[in-house]
Length: 109
Image 1 (cartoon, rainbow, N blue to C red):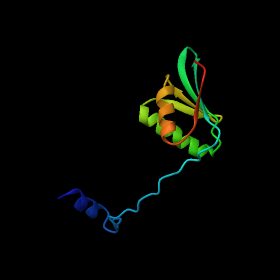
Image 2 (cartoon, rainbow, N blue to C red; image 1 turned 135 degrees about the horizontal axis):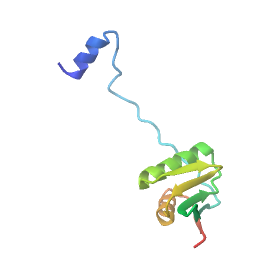
Image 3 (spheres, helix red, strand yellow; image 1 turned 120 degrees about the vertical axis):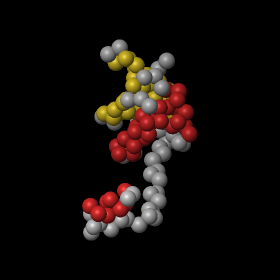
Image 4 (cartoon, rainbow, N blue to C red; image 1 turned 60 degrees about the vertical axis):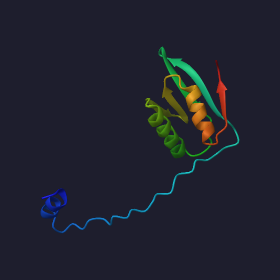
């Protein structure tokens, strides 16, 4: 008895979803004329990369933040229109953003 049969015994009225799932359209980010600001600071003695200056919606910026954190396997947060990434990842983040079509300006150091 496989899993489908067991589930059918437990939930006889349940109808499974069709096997075909519709493809979700990719989310497009707002590309702006002004460059994003990428800077490095030390907060409480720990290095932090800060991305600032995004003109689109906060939801788009949060999605971009999540993508960066997932890609590089780092922690971070989104507060007050700023993306905070733990560690000094300026060069990698700038390359990723340029690949997505953003203009990026490096500030400090």
